[in-house]
Image 1 (cartoon, rainbow, N blue to C red):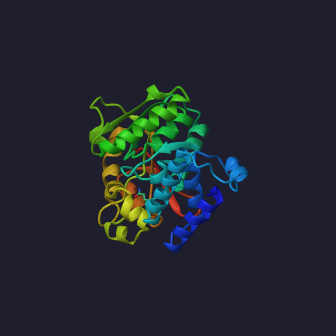
Image 2 (spheres, protein in one colour; image 1 turned 90 degrees about the horizontal axis):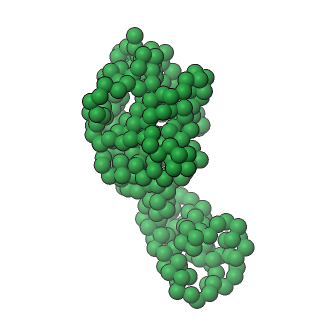
Length: 295
Ligand code: GLN
């Protein structure tokens, strides 16, 4: 048996099952099962594999991984990780897999901070999930304190672990805290206010969830996707209360669905927020709304 033969075998299984990226996925799974990087794979792919028990175990693991992917389990769940803002986040079935679209939100916060040149700010991230927004902004932004909240304790286990592992590199583990509970109710009642509040809340209308890709529909947490009948439940809730938690001139950054710009702008305008701006993601969809604290 060779690595190349295993790759062909796995790609074929996925291709026949109608998997969207059979070759790419099989390759990533093969590298993971054999703990190989691309260079070693390319150098050794035609070499006959030794009949060692280690190789046998890797082959079994690889075939098992291909079997899971064939059933449309997301690649990220099988590998247990997803890259976001150049950092490797641990993920599992309890959190939404970080999306590239959400990097737009993080980048906007960083650019605006850079312009304002304000150091030592406090950030609150609601519906934090894997902690990808909170942890990447803790690592790269000029924040002194970062707080994340989520209704799911299981999600917070992932967020805390990501915080510990990823922020230790930056010696910043002490600056981040996570609290379990419903949006702002999770926070300690200490009157703390924030310079920036971020959130990528669940925003898919309930009826649309069934039409999503099987990877999302069948494997990602419904609670991280479902924004109620109109998809807008969390924008209304956050809009109602964010003003009580923002400092004067503080800003709110929300990720939105590609067709929710008008509805969410209206919610925030009605609540009296100011300077509302909408930003597009890389594919060109409206993706992030920024609003300033009302007077
Ligand atoms: N962007 C995600 C998707 O495409 C949804 C994320 C969310 O509801 N916050 O499935």
